[in-house]
Structure formats: structure tokens, C-alpha cells
Image (cartoon, rainbow, N blue to C red; front, side, top):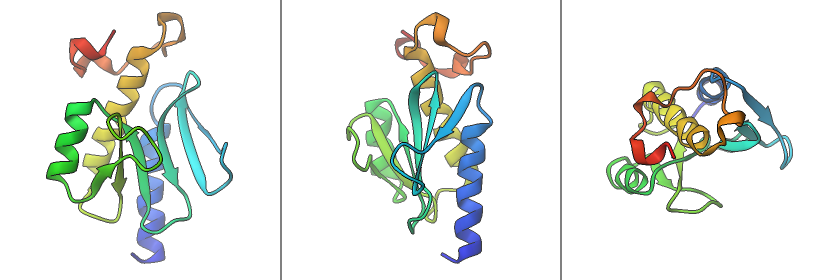
Length: 134
């Protein structure tokens, strides 16, 4: 992956995270890892300096298993609970739409678990399965 491709993939992933309601970017582990949160809860983590560029996202366990099985660019979450998180290689087959969908799903899962008073005023969770909205 060239430097230009690395920067493009990185900025597209960051943009997908930051466009979500009340999303914030923090660097609790140093400048090499961006953590994206909503109401203090993490929904994404991006390696800012590593190659290949990766993003780690929350998933429902069955969805995560299917993603790992069906997409070479997806593997169990790096340094995370392997049932609830996946890591996506942004340099692989993962196109921007695929990554944006996974970012949105991760965000929705985190928001669905927040107490009502902590949820953003605008929610994206209309597409979430009912059992994930509790």
C-alpha cells in the first residue's frame, strides 16, 4: 500500500466514524491509535501509523463469525473480545461502502446499549435487529 493509499483509507475510515452523531475521537493509547466513542463508549479503533491500516469495530457475535468466514480482510478483533469485535484490513478487499456499513453497525450496537438519557438525539438504530436494541 502506498503512502497515498494509506492516507486515503485512513481518512475515509476516520470520516465514517466522525460523521456519526456525537462521535468523538480520542487518543488514550498515544497518537498511533485513534479511539472513536459515543457517550464515552468505544465503537471503533483505528491504527493511525501501522501498515496495513486497520479498523476494529463492534459486531454481534453471529455477524462477526460470518464476516470473518466470508471476507479475507476481516479477522477477529485485535486485542479485543473476539466474539464481539472484528478488525478490518483497510488495504484489502474492504471498499469504502463496506467499511462505512460496518462502522454504522458498530455505532448502532453501542448506542443501543446506552441508557436512554445518554443516547444521541439523532439515532441510526432503525435498522438494528430488535434483540440488539435493548
